[in-house]
Length: 236
Ligand SMILES: [Zn+2]
Image (tube, rainbow, N blue to C red; front, top):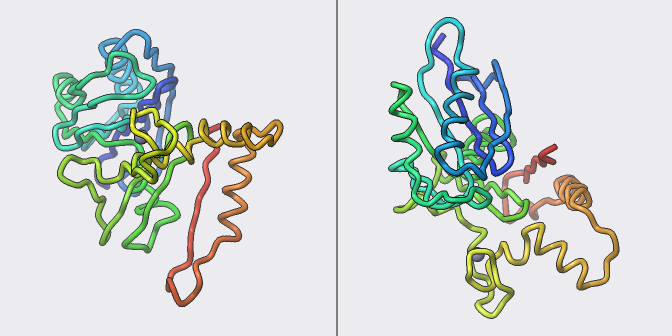
């Protein structure tokens, strides 16, 4: 069987490292604190340590893949900016990892590669066209078009959270007004719930809402020949 792959999920609080077989079977997984306050060098040292911890005892690794939040350049492997990671300004993560690990290294936006994962192994199996949405503090997205991840010329095609719905709308964390994220991110939803005097609404209520939506939501048969699939993750 082909050698396994190592995947890294870099978040503002935690980072995870996993060893996976090419068919997606999880062989080993660890998580550790990101220690984001230490800056990019401290964090990248911890990423390298995590890779060594999940490295197979026997055999080899065919590639390393890393996801990070926020806008990044997947062609050059550079994290342009990362929310919740102070000091991350054009960090060349692919080159940093390549200095230590002589393997092909791929870097992608977390929502983009989650879309790819759902397409290959999850709710999107069997569909050539799908949109993946991640709704937490922000709104991220990934688009699979004709069976391939849509990146666009700068790798930012899936950043649907910053589509402007109303130029006069509420301010968004990116500085623009009226982005989808400024209406539908959990921070915005909680703010709007407070404004509507809905008491004691919690993030779990949103998770219940989306699970309920996944049960009930169907496109009219004459609009879409495909069933609507939704998988929900609580992140806990
Ligand atoms: Zn925005």
